[in-house]
Image 1 (cartoon, rainbow, N blue to C red):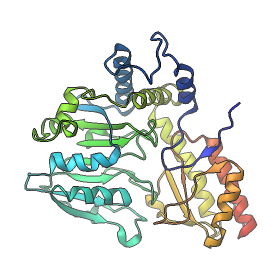
Image 2 (image 1 turned 90 degrees about the vertical axis):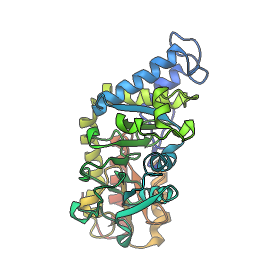
Image 3 (image 1 turned 180 degrees about the vertical axis):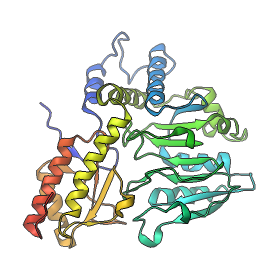
Image 4 (image 1 turned 45 degrees about the horizontal axis):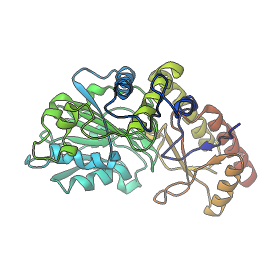
Length: 369
């Protein structure tokens, strides 16, 4: 029997056990095909069925309207940081509004500056990105090329609970770290994209959901692999796609539909997991110190620090002995980060919560759940 530990990594992250077991069973030969998914042609009928089912699952889970395309691309979120301004900012004479809520939206803004004029609609740098803006704090240009946001910042552990009101300007969202964790009103977005390795599959595939009118606006002078229109016209098969990654997205979305029961139920589970850890932090008598303000807290990435850094290695060592790994926080925030994506089982969160309570009793003031 394989002994699996609880991996709290921000990504690549845990995958549902059911999806891993199905992939393991079928790795040597897909049923009815006789060859491995690692060997299969992306032009084959078998793969056409796989990518078609992966898209159908996504459309069902997210209630994606008919006037949106679903693309399976490569290059991760970082390539989308460039493709978006190359397509919709460059040569427009407009600026793009960026809501800078943490490390990843800041990186996206810097990438956009290589293509055109960028306006900072809000920047949380003064608080080390420990909160998100109120609608009244946003300085939005009604004539902007688009408004860019990241729905969840993995490093700082802040998450938008709702979409900002941007009027008629296209809203672009990096949803990499909370994609498929909850229902999302897709029709509020012009583009929503996500690298798969948090909630949707393994590293190597990026999912882009883009409205038809924006697909058609993709400039003709872009290289083919950076052209949303060509990628959509070729149904993500302009070149060899990440075949195994798409297959795993299909298995993960099968799991969400058939075993979890949809995104409403997934969101309820995720809220319960996050609440356990935040209660351990809040009721520790100050032993655990939060980074994110309560109103901006993420359901996916729980960030916290200890009262003194001298305890950090002891915390990591004792956690590892219990099978709790990848808890070290990013250097820009310090402390710890527990990434509790969809596939992190409740058992893992309970084990971490109980360990945190015991650790605070041993080395500080008593905590109570």
